[in-house]
Amino acid sequence: QSVQVTPRTSKQGEATSMTTTKEASVVLVGCGCPLRSMGWYHATQILDNRVASCTLKSVVEPFYMTDLGKQLDEAGYNKFQEWRNQVEQDHGVKFYANTSDVPPRGENEHRLGIISARTSDNPKLFAGCIDMGCQTVFLEKPGAPTVTELEKMSDVAKEAGTSVFMGFNKNVSAYLSRTREFSASADQKCDVTFLHNNSYENTEKELAECFERNSEGMLKNMAIHELAMLVTFYDVKVDTIASVEADKIFSSCKTLKGPSSGKDFTDFDKIKFKITTKAEVEINVAADRCGGDDSVGIVEASGKELARFTMPDEDAVNNIPNLEKKYPGAMPYFYAQDPDYLTLKQRVAKYCVDGTKPEGVATIDVAINTLKVAEYLTPILQEQMK
Image (cartoon, rainbow, N blue to C red; front, side, top):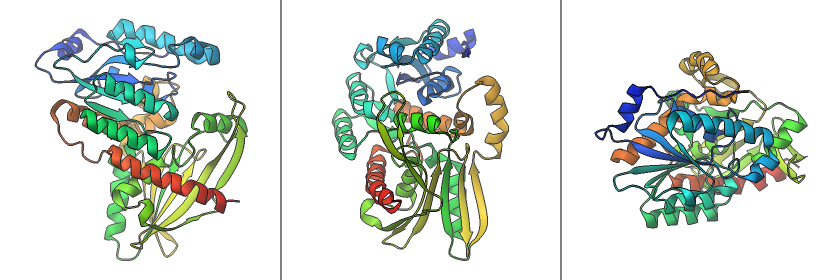
């Protein structure tokens, strides 16, 4: 399927080249396959002039810019090269296989690195962004495979004077604030559940590919957004958790063979659990790889549902047909979460340019605590599911 790229008009081109306009110059690290990978969608939103305060200057693609990418995924490689040729022609974006190939930052350049790669590659790519002079880095969740690696990355960034923000888009989402406000104002004790659905087909083939590509596991990958919300807004940390209990009726854990590596991957295809903190705060998280393409905040009391707030909300849902026409064949969750991806990048880009605090955006310190919680919970929940 051909991927369309909207060329800049001459007026837009003039606006981006004016010296009076302060913009972040974006280096996207990890584009991935058009229509399927989050990095591609970040690039597309910027190229279509939908993200204020920034321009895409360079793309570093460590897989599809190499012969290995062609050997292992020729279809994806061909899609990427077609898209690359169009973007180079229409926008003048430069493409590289390695971060070390990107030219040094200009004297007055506000350089923003957006890293959207496989989690296992992030520490190396992050070091590359620091070396190329990025003053600000937008790092997709969970940031790194382990807490130790993420802490090292944080230390390196602090030493370099680089600010690091995370792609936890739900932290800035309306459904979260509305769920919290409703439960806080209720006249009885409420039971709150944050449910996260993805739209993978419920087949062994589809889930095996998902497990392999997201080999860090459900809690470090899909449900990491909900854990970040708990860390940010409910003071959930490893040392504040009193107990965790899996909902065995809802949950499912499988071992599947990865199609590329042939290795076995054990993960949840769906999970639900309740966390109780030492401050007696109770909160539920649920995630289902094959549940749909929305996220829901559910408020209950005495076994009855009082309210539910969804992401995407009504405005976002109404815009999905427009996005489907604009980007046909893309992953459904791109359409559903489109406004929040825009908000995150706009706030981080504005910070990169003028230092305005990006309200609600998670820092790398929040990510470290979130990853600690994920690492703590995974073996406990797997043991409870046996």
